[in-house]
Length: 83
Image 1: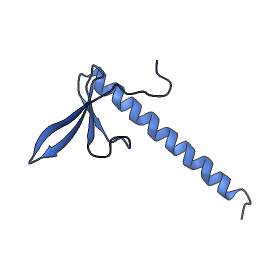
Image 2: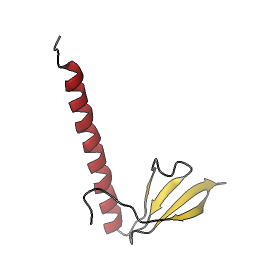
Image 3: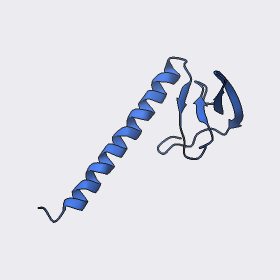
Image 4: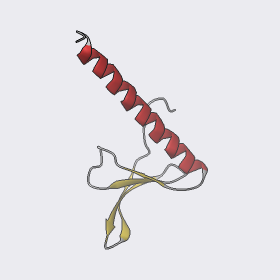
């Protein structure tokens, strides 16, 4: 058994985490380009789902009785590597 097994697992975990983040960002770009809102969870807002509109505005939303309800307006997203 390799002595570097924990390090190897960490490197693989980090690569998967980075790939997932990059895929999510690509999906967000594609949604914006098509004029479609993007929906995602964010640990900063655990009480609902974030809806990001093509213009970059964001709201925290919940589903109640099959209807989307705006809980609150959110500030613009601050993403690493974006101006």
